[in-house]
Image (tube, rainbow, N blue to C red):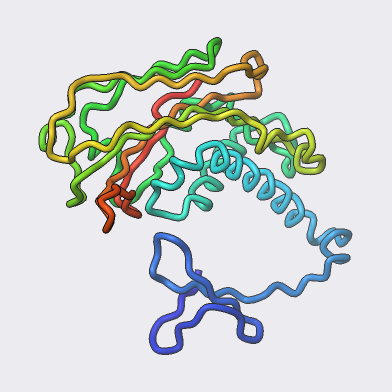
Length: 266
């Protein structure tokens, strides 16, 4: 992908060129506008492969949005643009489908639940490099509950915060995401998207250099009728967010001083 350098760097559109920047990168990316007419794209046989690829890209884009919508607080803790990360991940899952024809392959989270725990939410400071002794998470699908057992946090030993900030807090989320099929892109009403249940809990702000005793974080979703839906995957995620006091003494989150990961799926 071409990038702009030197004194001519800009963002926006000039003639046939479009320049833009992406979160997590200081490069300016440039691309040329496409000039395929809508009628030719929809009908001409030479664009058949392009139409199939475009249809599958739409499925991946919707599946990536599904994850972002389900975990908005966790997404706030990232230090990179998660849209291409999620779309690339969904494309990998899509390619694993051997039943549907090219152009209609779905993204089946329910068939690859464990793979979700490998999603990298941060580039600079991975969760496991900060929290050496990973919390033990138990997801009870039949109760739509998540229990996270956190061991004693010993700063500098099993808990190494790389940010020079005085406070931090722990954030945990439990959410549902849905498998995405081609017909759900054509008929969005059969895709839950914003109606999928989720819940998030925050710990109190804690001093970064103080030992924290072992404790639990419990999340519970009530009155959901999706427990038996095989196309629903439940996701338990956790994150760390640094904070510092503002002029009034109130502790405020510090942007990009955070890390997160998906702990468990079910």
